[in-house]
Length: 309
Image (cartoon, rainbow, N blue to C red; front, top):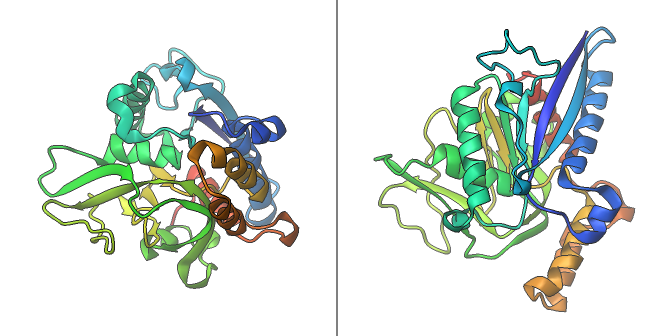
């Protein structure tokens, strides 16, 4: 039996020009990594009688192109309007915008509305986010201005950008949910490519946030922080059975991050020394795989297939 997983990928932005010319939009990058991961899991975890198959449908949300709600799995009129391949998951890609710009961004407001609709009305549809997608999910689904306990917000990171391979200290509760994918990581440390200058914060009300010391993360149950780095305390969010987001880019490799750095340098005014440092952190293609992108992609596919522990 084939387990079909249909993912609607919402393209937030256009990748670096050279990256786009070589590999297409962000949705194509996710198609590649998720299909490769499903094939690998089919060989190691499943028999020939039970296989995973990933289907990707891209959507240009800047152009107002979203999945029709009646195509989402679990739609109220599913019996009256049968859909051949209903959408099982929605994935929000990375991009250059800042979530804190939402008040002046109609397309971002529409995206927030869509994510809230999917989360509140379509419990069978899982939600994924990477980089900007992670931050948007935090703002749309975790932030609650009426919460008397905590404040949740997205901000420019005051300690600078994370570019290249960084090590995320994963939370034990998250690792335990995906032991087959993440259980072999040394001391629960995930090395993953990053390219961001914004971060999600969630702290108890009245807590002071300083440049040198981040306070403990405060998330409402059943949300789980997947892990942290010294300057970015919430590297992803996990809501069992519903949502999985990550700040890093498991869909990116050295080639992709190198193109992003080279195109961003003149736009962001990076000095040659800063660009050289970032490229060193990205790594060298000739040295082979230096990160744990395959491990995290395995966790993502396991999440999509409902294989959480």
